[in-house]
Every structure is written in C-alpha cells, then in structure tokens.
Image (tube, rainbow, N blue to C red):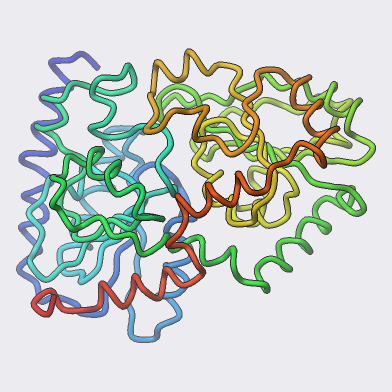
Length: 391
C-alpha cells in the first residue's frame, strides 16, 4: 500500500467511517451489565483478558462478548470486524482491551461507558506507543498524534507504581493524569492459585511424560520484526543443549502468539525440546518451569513472582535495542545473566546452584510487581463498577 493510499485509508476509516458507525448506535439505552472484550491482532483471548473474561462470564447478570479485530490482517476483513465491534460497544457499560486500538481510540465514547486498558504485559521493558517515535520501530510523532491508538481510557492497570511514568509516556499522558492505576494485573492472579498450578503440572505430565523426574526449562522469546510480519528467533543450538543438559532437563518452547511460521525442532532433539506454543497458555508454563530463558519479553516480570532463575538470551541485543529501545538500561534491569551464545546458556545451567542469585530476582519482583498479589481482579472490578459520578 503506497503512502498516499494509506493516508486516505486511515482518514476514511478512522476519521469518518468508524466514528459514524459508533454514533449510529450510541443512542441506544446503555446495558448496565454488558462487557465487551477486544483483541486487536490475535484470534483468541490473551492472558491479559482471559482470566477477567472467565470471571465476568461466571456472573449471571453479565452479558459478555468478544471481538477479534485482526488489525494487521486483510484490510476489508478488519473493517468488517471493526464495524461489528463498534456496534456492540455502543451500548456497553464496560470495554476491555490489552493493547492499543485505532478502533476504540477514534470514537467519542458515551459518558457512561468505562474503558479499561489491561495491556498485554507487566512491568515496563521494551518501548511502545509514543515512546517509539524516535526509534526505528515507531512512526513519526505527528502521525501518532493524528491517529492516536492510546485514547479514551478511563483506567490503565499496571503492575507497580514504579512503571506509571513509562505508560504515561507511551500513551502520551501528562504526569498529572490519574488514569494509570497500579492495582496489579488481572492475569497474574492465576499464578497465585494452587489449583491452577497443580492442574498445569498434571497437564505437563499428560502431554509431555518425559518431564517426569527432570527439571524444566522454558524458552519464551519475543518476536522479531513488525506484528504483521512477525518472525521467531532461531539462534539456539538445541542439539548442543540436549547433549549437555538432556540428562537432567527438558526444554519447552513457547513462541510469541503473533508468529505464524515457527522454527521446527530437529528430529534428533525431539526427546529433549518440545514446541508447546499451541498446547499451553503462558501462565501454565510459568508455573511448571524451573528456569526461564527469554530475551526482551515482559513475561519475565510475571515469572519473577516465583523467584526462580532467569536467563536472557540476547544474541542480537545491539540490533534489537537500536530498533526498539528500552525503558530501562537492559543490563541493569535484567535479574539474571545476559548471554549471547548457547554455550553460555549451558554453562550457566550446569552451575546453576552456585550462580543463581535469588535476592536479585526478589528485588526485581518488589520493584516491578509489587501490586500483584493474587487479588488484582478483585480490585479492578471494584474500581470499574463504581459509577463515574461517584468517583
């Protein structure tokens, strides 16, 4: 799509069509017990929305619906999805999102509707939104202001007071704005539930019997490139890992959900390494893993709640850092070794007992996850169910 056609497309949809569609139906009576969940690019509910969705569905009086916009996919299909979503949102009392959405940001919401941004990660790791205007990953600030994807939120829930500033910057909010609320992140509540942990362990043994009697490494990297063309990293030497660690460990691989083509596990390593991207949700894998290997993914914030070892496989740190940017100094932030080769991973795991610094992870948890205690969803529901006029 040429720049000229793209500008016309954005103007017609975000300035004319979508606002018109919402206005058509916002005159309908408000449905006080109606909630709409919106996923911008996934085809199933992500962890940030899933647990809250289940909680609201269990309340008999609630009418709950979900819309998958697929903003990065086929443009005509996206328009159809957006039009249906806006019609549904027009009489809803509650709207929940977990990433920036041009659809909700371009309308003028009715006064009674409460829009909550749960975001799709905890803490503040790699930059997003307005924070990327000066990075290769982002667009121009002028373009971001014209078509702001981070508008109309009543609440933005975060994992700790420490990261409020980063979300204000990313969403172009003034420092005095009070919409960023450090009440904890809903999806982390699952990690505190013993029943969920036991079910995850049983599921692991059912799907992967080889895990019995061995320790579990989780490799959960973020994607490379844009959301629409997301690629998985493919620089880990699985055969070397199996040779050196296979006696005592297995490796579970969880690729980012926007990655469509995943690297295949070599046949000779399939008794050691397992791609479980489709079989498990990330919260289950965090519960059953004895060690987490990531790179630039925010899931390490959630994993810190267990105070277990972490490794950061940042083989492309210079390239990725220049492209995306971070809110904190990467090497000061990471609560575990930063490595660049598979051999370094092996070496650390072989000497895990003497090298793992639990206090480093505990301090990281206290700084970035202090509001996550297993009761974030309760606080969220108490907050949003208050009438705006009572606030």
